[in-house]
Image (cartoon, rainbow, N blue to C red; front, side, top):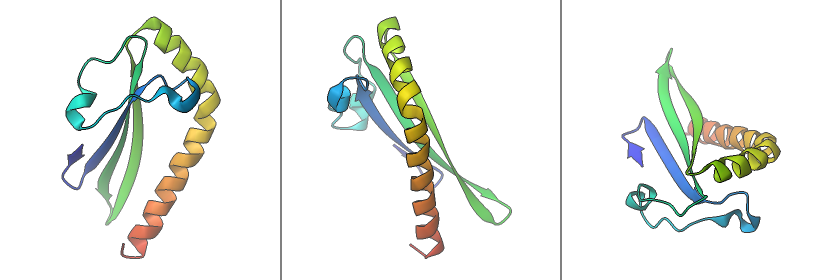
Length: 105
């Protein structure tokens, strides 16, 4: 979803710890709010833009909701492995956005 020019969020649902990431189809934003199958998780990746001293600060935030203790345990193991790579990808995304913005894109 989008909140004007200040915030943007992308959502995923699934069993991310499974081979192929176990993604569940989400055809529209309303589907993200419907109950998910047992032992699954929802992930929301948000971007927020803030005006700071004549510049724009872009931040990201990832939130995850697991609908069971089993899903929470599986995600904890998965996240321990993927977290460093996730951080690297996030930094690369932010650098690309910065370059595009500075180039007038």
